[in-house]
Length: 439
Image (spheres, rainbow, N blue to C red):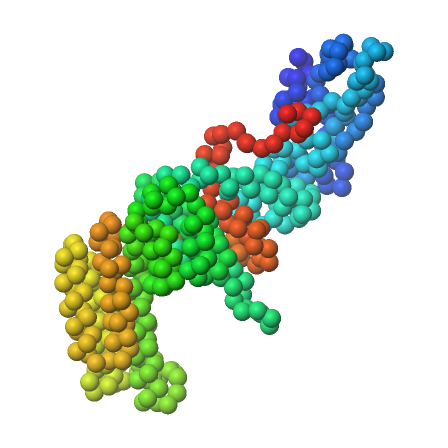
């Protein structure tokens, strides 16, 4: 009892162990420990065992005071005194330190948490623990894989969003590769969560993942938000036939202002014969053209109108396109679907009358997404914005990792960082395999 209540044992924080000595070596701490068991029975005949030998085992533990910690476990080898017992000798075990493990269980769990929840680089965490990158990444896989593959993580979801992000940048021997991300957009569940990422940016990639899910899960998805990409729309229509597909408002508005840029560049090139340069009237107002009309000050209005007067065509193609982009954005402010539909029809008619090639192309695109555009007002204004927020977290992990070559590692680290609820994990015991000698 006295050994259990010592200050060193309290600082160690491992039930069933006592600290024998502490020393420092090359900037690292070494703590000699042993179990508190004094009376041990033979696992075969239950006779009181006798001490046979002691064998030290070195294992890494949680850092202390900014220094890596090594536990030197003085393991006791017990011997059965009964001459007819077949057990002979055995070495003591503990559930907190697996046989032949290089890390304690709590150290492996903390490495996984820091890489997953905190998004820390594996190399930095390995350095803090005094271990190699591979050892740290092995701990992340052991503690993280069953968490991201837990079927409960996909439970109670009724809305999803899909989008693509770059996985590997283009190089001399390959083009840019993409992955498709599926994000939980269910309202009332806190921040959006990444459900999974699959290689590729195509209908087949998304459809394969969807078809691999339980049919009951797919039937529970009522809403799916997407960007204006036909590949994803086709996959969602096949895999989630009962779900309402919603075109993301942000991307629609971006298409409108992209048309403004296209018209500005065309007119600029026709008038000057080159790309925009300092001093060109339209180049000077390029940023003002992308600003909301109600965000303009008197000074910026004056600059915008002066630039249009000096650089626009006689039939005001750029001004007409700018008005169309502003009107397209305002449709999303409609009070209900009926008013939005009326506004969309007026907008399409305006684009047809404007007779601007880029605007006509934009109108055809929006009209081809007519149902998905108006579905925004039928679903409580569902947006793919949370999916874009998750994409920022994905890009952060990619920067932290300085790029990835192994897709499995990439997927695991993404899901641990933005696809797992770590608050729930802290409230539940770790579900991992116990060592064979303990289980």
